[in-house]
Length: 221
Image (cartoon, rainbow, N blue to C red; front, side):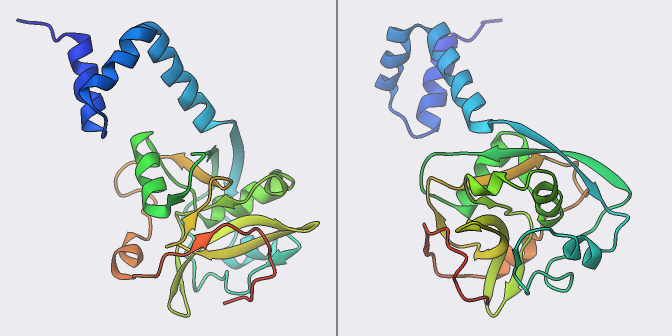
């Protein structure tokens, strides 16, 4: 039985991800150990800090939303528009992913899945802002796991700031997010457990727009 050459495996991985075979020269110049160390440092930086929150599914969804302590909550964030399902209390790890580039929602979700993660949902946003209220003053945080069809737009929750105020607002799923946003993610659940609203994503289309502003002054949808 022949053992695969690690460099051949690495070359194949580079090509499979859009690189060129000659890109392997960069790795060999660095040395495989140094190259792998750089990759590990990249993923550590990408995943950032981990935030532990408790989601209390014993509370009715309307009460979970009513207890939000943000200065502003978009009035379209309701149980009718955003389903919240679960049982008991659940301790969740929230990863704030920073890709440091402009990115679509679909691309961000694809990256999450490759890391063994999935998009965080509205209930995670509500638990997060309660425990870490000042984090959204540093950057906007997007929760791509909950989707609501509002006036023809497929919207997702986001925690953001507007001046000195903190808000729980909505943005178009089909935005292109700029490099300053963070994407909230949780560990991927087993099949059938807490599924995403994938049907809404699959059946709704929207125009891509640049989500580069952080003002809460936009008119509610």
